[in-house]
Length: 407
Image (cartoon, rainbow, N blue to C red; front, side):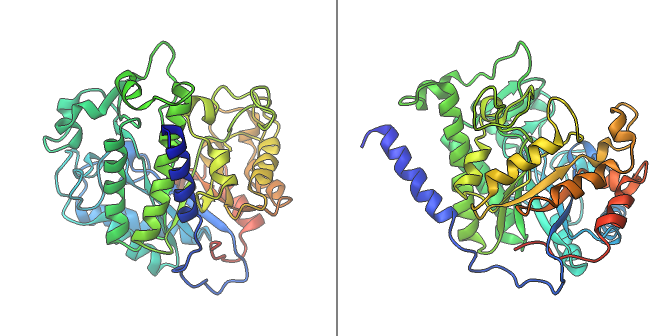
């Protein structure tokens, strides 16, 4: 076979494995309601947890327990806990250093195991724990020497591309794709996480006037593709398919979900796209064919970040939710909607986000579409602050009873 044929055959074989049934799925909890009610807990830059680097182990544990208790009080049932924010780890990993967001120094042992504790404490409260990984982001700066001396990016600088003031692993290198999978699967192997969760970062978001320099990788591996964009999409497709298959082999029953930017393509670009005018399209700009992953059931759930209000002209919530519902129809891939709780009450946002009822209206609208099986809120500190009572309104209107997550 030629190169393209071999690739197509391999993708088909991986897709068959990725779509296999959940033989080891955990038994359902005894609730009459089944829907996802999740919350993201971001650790990058200490966004949600821990509140600052350098807290004692006891202080970090107490803050984490407080966030889990907060989820229970709001009748949520899942926590998307960021355990690999920048090619580092919130567990003792043989592949990557301890995260600097714990102690302030990358590679320094915090004196406890946050991921292990999070899984135990979440399960003790009846919460699912979805381990949230960022596959390719290495650092939020461009100075390799600031990374821990043992960091793989320092041992393999040829793996790294500086872009937009950050460092990224190059998705076009097969050795990088294998390494990041190994690093993430170490956590899946060691801890009974309910799901592996990716966010919206694949190839980085475009930065005006800058080029993501993957020329050497494209010269080496891009033959047989119509253009660089098609090759890049193939690289991300392979990450998704290979990761799905390896998760199932490593810990059967653990699900795989992805939370992409909310617009796949605008209809003006592709008639299959949504009636939106978004400045970013995941297919074209992040080289992530999120619609394909759903339609071909490569992943267990999709949670698009539909971070706009009802009536927003460029990307209307009331347009995107039905579009995603139609994409998910009949696929077996669960659809959850990512909700921008962080915008509610933010004075920098438009008038819709100053209304405490806006978020609740999202759930009411989504109820018209049976493919929508729940919602996930960004993010934990915003649930805690609840500036204008938008989350309290959601709980009062929609979460009067506990619910088990869909399986």
